[in-house]
Image (tube, rainbow, N blue to C red; front, side, top):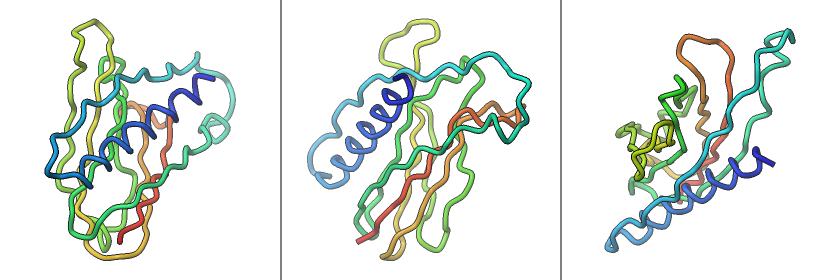
Length: 149
C-alpha cells in the first residue's frame, strides 16, 4: 500500500509540472507534500534480490519547451535522486535542485526537481535511482518515459 501511495505522489507531481509547462502564462501550482517509503532492515538476500521493481511513469511534452520531473525526497535520511541515464540526443538537462518542505518539521520530505529541454520529437526514457551515495543498493528506481511532440 505504501508503494501505491508513493507511485501516486510521483504521478501527481509529474502532472502538476506538466500542467504548468502547458499553461506557461499561468503561475505554477503548489506541489503536494509527499512521504517517502522508508526501507526495511537490511537482509541477507543477494544484492540483485534487494533491487525493487522499477516504477513506470510517462509524460508528454512539447518540443523545445522546458519541463520538469519532480520527485519527493528526504536528504536527512541520506537518500537522494540521481539520474542513472537519459538520451542526450533527445533531452538536455537544464537544472537539478532540491526544494525544502513547506512545513519546517524534522524529517519532513521536500522535492527534487530535474528540469529538461526536449531537443527533438520522438520518445525516450529517463531512468532515476533513489539511493544513498555511499551504498550500491537502490531503494527506488523510476523509468520515466518522455513523449516529445
